[in-house]
Length: 166
Image 1 (cartoon, helix red, strand yellow):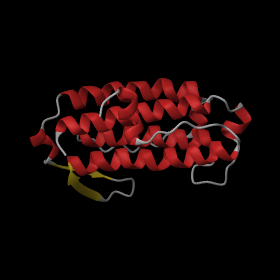
Image 2 (image 1 turned 180 degrees about the vertical axis):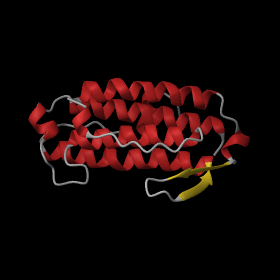
Image 3 (image 1 turned 120 degrees about the vertical axis):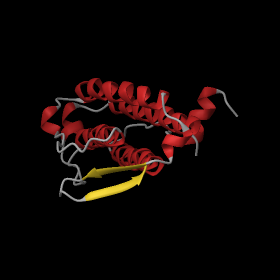
Image 4 (image 1 turned 60 degrees about the vertical axis):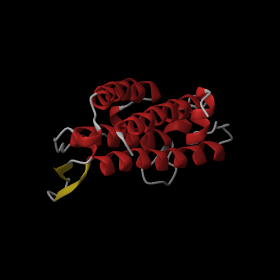
């Protein structure tokens, strides 16, 4: 994967996040915040987790090791999450704009919440971030369908079909 392909991957990621956020607006506040017996408690909690992880990894790519976790209590709904998420997308966009193929191969290190030091190539850390978001979007899509909400596809190739690219 090269830097142009990485920019495309995160353009897709932003598109898929926005698409699922839009589909989720059909939920009532109670449906959005009710306990789903999943890892992050609710659909809103899962969105907060995706947003937080994208923020966290962007900081790690830049050389920081934040110790802050976002909680669902900090957000009263999807608008609040999306407003903060836009800032992460803008910051990530600036990061991606200056990204080179050579930088993708450099190793980054960070300290996790347990104080352990980890090191990966930037390319693997970035791929992990996009994959993580995809995984949790799938969870949200399943929860929406269980509630009778129609969910549009967020498949990678669907993104390219909508762009009109082969």
